[in-house]
Each structure stands twice: as structure tokens, then as C-alpha cells.
Image (cartoon, rainbow, N blue to C red):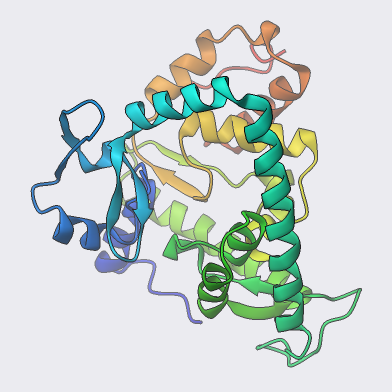
Length: 291
């Protein structure tokens, strides 16, 4: 798929949407606004009216939100969890493992007679077939649907939105996208040098983090890789976007003021790697601050 013109005004506007904080209403936002034209919804628990971003998503395609706001939903879930913690954990573990096994078998049977859409090679142990999905679509991937224990219908829907590629072609496409995003970052900086652009390429976890959402096997990350990804999620608020645009002075300030000596060693290492991915600015903490 050819990359759009980096200097296109339309594309730059669309790309800047990637820097906005997602609340689960991302690519289907129009469907939610059609169902809730006022942008607000009444909570059945606290009996208050909130903005639709305060509600969790129930069905993206239909634009449905949950009946309870996030705070009320969390409070109710906490009560249920505390009153029957052991039974809940056993039930969730049992069901999820069964659903994951079923979903992975379904995905593997789908890939059994497929070939790479680019080179037409069949999969093998050295070059297995993977699922690729455009990261800008913000849709549920095959790994998220299969590994999350969702229904077979949800897995099939994710498969229909994906392209089957072999590992070699997927790696090549990932490298092309990564280089393209870097060029786009430079384009945005040249057009607006005063803006603060945080470029999160995740370097050493990129190859482990990206296939987690693109493969059918859903291989788990190591604890160190997961700590790195979680630190990115918590500090920046995004887990999937490769480039985030906006003002990040509060984040940089909190990173400076954090008592890093009290953090786990893996978290300190994650913050060091995070610092290396940031654009060079005089406001960034030094290596001494992160030791």
C-alpha cells in the first residue's frame, strides 16, 4: 500500500488525531455521536449526567456505551471482586483458557491453507504466517480478539480486517512504516518547530510489542519488556501509537520529580530507555537523574 504524501495538509490533519488521547471512542467516534448527539449520557448508578468519554465502550460498531460511568463501573466491579475474589478468579481463568485454546485453534486452521499476500509463500516454522493490520485503524486485532477470549465472531471480524503476511514481509513492512513515521516526524518538526513532539518508537521492545498485536499466537512479552510498555502506557497514556503529538511539559516535569530510587530496577531501566526515545531537549532529565 503506497504511503500518502507526507506534505499533504489533509494527511497531516488526520495524523494529528493520533496524538489525541483515546478513550475507546477512536475510529468509531461518528457512530457514538450519532447515538448521543449531545455528547452526554446519564449514568444509571450515580444518577448523574457525564460526557460520553466517561463511559466505557460496549459495542464500537453500533456506537453503544455501558450504562454505568467509569467510576461507578469500577466501584461495582470492586465490590463483586472483593466479596467473591477466589471464585471470580477461578471462573475467569477457567473460561479464558478454554476460549483462548478454542480461538487459537480456529486461527491456526484458518492459516493452514493460506499464503502470504505479498510473496505467496506458505508458512513454516522458520517463516510463519502473521496477521498485519493498519495501525492507524485503531481496530481490534486478531491477537487481541483471540488471546482475549472473545467470541469466534469477533475473531473472524478481526481476521477480515487483516492481511496475511509471512514474517519476512511483515518485518519489511514494519521497517518501512517505522522509517516513514520518522520522516513524518521530521516533516512536522520543520513545519512547526515550536511544538513538542514525543516520538515513542520503543526501540528494543518494538519487535516484541508490535507482533503482540499482529500475530495469531500472542506470545507473551518478558517481564522487562512488559515493564517498559506499561511505563509508556502510564506516563504517556498511549499504548499503541508510535508518534504522539501535543504538549508534554507536565510529563517531563513529573519524570524529573519522581523518586526513581524507590522504583523497581526494571522500571528504572524502562524510564532510561524511554528517555532515549525522546527528542533531545534541554528539559529532559540527565542520566544521573535516572540512576
